[in-house]
Image (tube, rainbow, N blue to C red; front, side, top):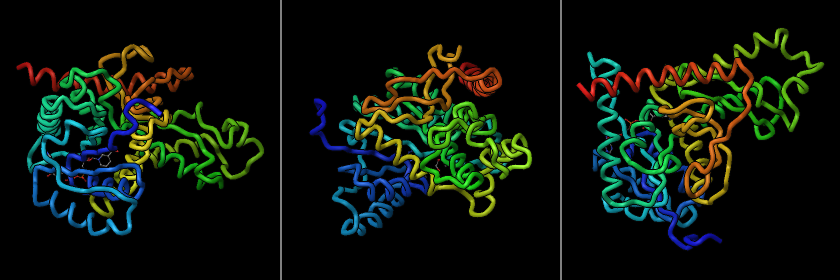
Length: 323
Ligand SMILES: NC(=O)c1ccc[n+]([C@@H]2O[C@H](COP(=O)([O-])OP(=O)(O)OC[C@H]3O[C@@H](n4cnc5c(N)ncnc54)[C@H](O)[C@@H]3O)[C@@H](O)[C@H]2O)c1
């Protein structure tokens, strides 16, 4: 039992759109939270989602669900930010980014004004960039302002390996690292099946004619997963809702789970001034430890490349803000 284990496990979700509401639904079913409060710039949407969810209370484990006030940040355990602006016609990527940084700054200011003790989890995209700016704005220890990183991408990776290798997804440890986006990469050196390194597992297996081509194909599929779903239905929300519930479990239950959340780096892997998906130990404090994995040179280089891409965008945004 830790000191404050008696306190309500209260989760504030900012942004009650597709991702925020699906997360609320998954979280309510999980029984992890005592209170789930929803906040949205569109209060009618937040109210509609709350009413729809509370009508399911008879079927959920006990949980309070209601619309949030700004004061709700003051005693929240976890604040999950899924709020984001959509691209306007004619708007450049950088302009959209500036608007989203502004949204995140505004929300972080409200949270810090309430002297919130919570861990803040950024989900809005581009998640690594927004995590970096949210952390900067907060002035908090880096462990308390984190992003969902490549937790979803790693789940997609495990699913594809499971299908290819014919092994239950739960027996596969595998991680996608770096940016949640195009420069992400598979840490093949860390992949294992039921405790066996991938090389050992694949020995004598005839499922792939050309294992290098198979690896490239799997990585491409992971990288393009979101684009495929967006082509079919416009956005993604189910798997991310579950990935967020997994992250919430590690924080609310102080589980010390290892997840590839986005964390601001302070010299790990030779990197600073950037936030990206890397294996971290997660507890009620947020990121307790960024794991320093001995990556082989090709994977370490891929991480540096991913960080450089993110740093360049951060630099552009900082230059615009300073002008
Ligand atoms: N990190 C991941 O793995 C991952 C996966 C899927 C989606 N996403 C991202 O999650 C975000 C949300 O996606 P969605 O499909 O739910 O979008 P959505 O448009 O359905 O919902 C976004 C909501 O944010 C609200 N909002 C905007 N500004 C706000 C503010 N200042 N305060 C409170 N609410 C505000 C909007 O009113 C809207 O309801 C997007 O940025 C999306 O790219 C991330």
